[in-house]
Amino acid sequence: MCYAIPAKLVAIDGQTGTIDYFGEKRQILLDLDDVAVGDYVYAQGGVLVRKIPPKEAEEILEHWQTIFFELKKTDAALSKIDQNKLSSNALAVLQKVNLRKSLTPDEMLSLFNLQDEQELKVLYEIANNVRQREHGNSSCIHGVIEFSNYCSNNCHYCGIRKDQELPRYRMSIEEIISAAKEAVDEYGFKALVLQSGEDFWYDDAKLITMVREIRKMGVLVFVSLGLRSKGTYQKLYDAGARAVLLRFETSNKDIFAKLRPGTNLADRVQLIKALKAMGYVLATGFIVGFPGETNNDLIQNILLAKYLAPDMYSFGPLIPASNTPLFGSPKVSKDLILKTIAVMRFIDSNSNILVTTALETLDRNAKQEALLAGANSMMINITPKHYKELYKIYDDKADVTKEIKQSIQETVKMLYELGRAPTDIAAHAVKTRPSGQARG
Ligand code: SAH
Image (cartoon, helix red, strand yellow):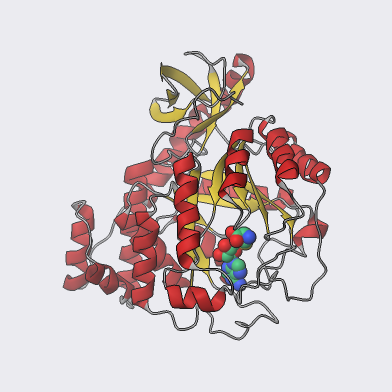
C-alpha cells in the first residue's frame, strides 16, 4: 500500500530541490542531508521527507507507470465544465474566475446566495476545474493520531472541552510512537498529524521526543496542539516538525470571544502568523455554521484565511456535540461547505484544500463531492480504535467504528475513481530551514 509516488530529484538549488513525477515537476524544501540529483525521494507538503533506495523506488514506479496516466485521464474528464444552464448573473462572476480575475466580496456573496441546483453544479464544476488546472491530479492523504482528549480550554462548541464529562485518555509517548510506526511501516503513510486537546501534561520534553522519533521514520510531522507558546512550537520545529494545523475558528471576534472563553482572536491569529514565520507548512481555516454567523462573516473568514497565506486550508461544518453549550444548534447544510470550498478555491486558486472529518460526519458522501468542488487533500484517522471512540470533539464522528485498513481501502478506491494520484501537492512556497540546523 503506497501513499506517495516516489519522485526523482532532478535539480538542487541551495535548500530547494526540483522533483519529477513522470515529467511533472515540483519544488520542494530539501529537509534531509546527503541528497543528490538522481536520488529517489518522497515529498509531502513541499518537504522532502525520505530518500528511497533506487531498486525499491523503481519497482514502485513501475507499478504506477500506466496507472498514473490513466488517473490523469479520468481526472481531466471529470474536470470539464458545463456552463449551459447558468443564470447570466452567476455566469458573469464565474467568467471572471475563468479569466483569473479576483472576486470582490459582493461577488463572493452572490456565489453564496446561489440556490438553484443546476447553478450550484456549475459552481462546483468550475472550482474543480480550477483545482485541476492548478494542481493536476495530485492529492494527498495524511494520517491523524489523536493522542489525548484532555483539554484545558472550554470552547462552547467542542465535545472534549474541559467541563465535558467523558472518559479521558492520554497516550504515552511510547504508545504514540508505536502507533506512528505502525502507520508508517504497515500502512505506508508519509505524513502524520499529531492532534490533541490543549493538554499540558505533554511538556516540551515529551513533545520533542515524540516529534524527533516520528521524524526519524521519514515522514512529515504535522502538529495540531492548539494554543501552546511560540517557544514550544519553535522547539518542535527544531526537533523536526514541519507542518502545523491551527484554525482561527471564526474571524468574528465577538463570536470568538463568546465561544472560546478566556482566549481571543487577536492572540490566535498572531500565533498562526508566528508559526508561518517560523517556517512551518501552515494549515488553517475555520468552522462554518456558528449560531449568529452570517454569509458576510463567512466571506470575512475566507478573506482572513487567505490573508494568513497558508499552504493548506481546513474548514468544516459545526457538528453540535452533546452536552456542550452549542448542542441543538441548527444543522449546517452540506452546500454551505461546498460553496466555501469552491469560493476559497477561486480566491486562492493554487491553494490546497482539505476535506475534513466533520464534513464527512455531516454527510457520508460529502468527501467525494468536496473533492469535486475544489478540495484536493484529506486525512484518515489512524488513532488506535479504543481511543478514537473517546476523541469526541463532536457526535457521530465519521470513521470511528471503521478499521484503519477499511478507511484506507475506501479512500484509495475513491481517489482512483476520481483519477487522483498521490504525487505531492505543491506547497505555496518553498520554506527555508533555520541555518545551521541538522536535517532529518
Ligand atoms: N486543540 C487543537 C485541536 C482541536 S480539534 C486546537 O485547538 O487546534 C481540531 C478542530 O476541531 C478545532 O480546531 C475545531 O475547528 C474543530 N472542532 C471542534 N469542535 C467541533 C465541532 N463541534 N464541530 C466541528 N468542528 C469542531
